Length: 455
Image (cartoon, rainbow, N blue to C red; front, side, top):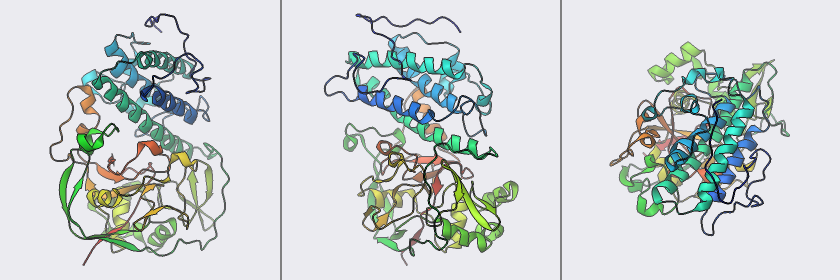
């Protein structure tokens, strides 16, 4: 590794050991300024990433299970590269190692060449200890910068983007680890948790539908109503859309309901599937959601707590858009548009089974589950596929430079999901949040809520 230089501080301060430090206690002499939340938010978010990686061995953190996933070590390094590239470099801070600009750039064309995404698992060097030192160096420099204060609005906005970016990678780290462990014949658990064996007939009752009158409504976020809260650029501008009257299912589709779809030949009936979806089913041999398997006549699932009996009343997860659409057709319903979903969710509090609950799996609906206007599970448990392609809102303009590549250039061949999942940080999600994935992808915690027209 090349020698590195650090910015000088007067008086000198020690390098913070982010592996041992309990963030937010202020015992290192670096305390946030009154009224400035960025310093404390930075420390909390960076600490949370390390906490999520803590149960993993060094071997766990270097392997890449498929091109769509990334090794945990790469997530640790890439999120650090983001702070170094977008915040520290413009402030004149010397890089930890110039080679990392090539190794840990993800997709920013404006920043030059990068290591190929499908080959991230080949990066055995730098080793995990060196990546941890990289994080410690960047954390120290970032905390000095934030402690000094006086940041202009543009820099503060970039810090807020960096926090949201790292939270996204925290979620990806968990979903990527789940996919990795699912390839292991030993079926290891990321974090063992007590699991109950549900009764075979467990059910949360029939689905009911909540009716909305439609009409001219506003969706998205504008600079004026967003206030100081962070939102991604693709969540705006706020604009008007016309909705026909519609109905939205009061809850998510369950594993038991998906079993009925399977037993009725759902994966073997081309009339239920979009053409590209049927091609996927045929080529990939899909016959159930990802992580399901059947042994001795019993269905089992696999999650971050390891393998176990399929929890029939829990929301179905790890299905693609194609599967969600086929299930909706089989049900005689449809998927909601993202505008319908946001309109229905806009007045609901952001509460639910998100990562902060500690469950790290979709949970069955219970009488105590939060509801708003008759709707349950709007936030958390699983991301909800919508019928809407990922496209710009009217008036959207990507920011100039590399940061403008964050969302805008992906607005093609992707479908929108809403609501967050059981591995989404609760502070990260809101009604206007637009997640997007390609229609065949299903390693995320993605599920289904049905909709229907009012006839």
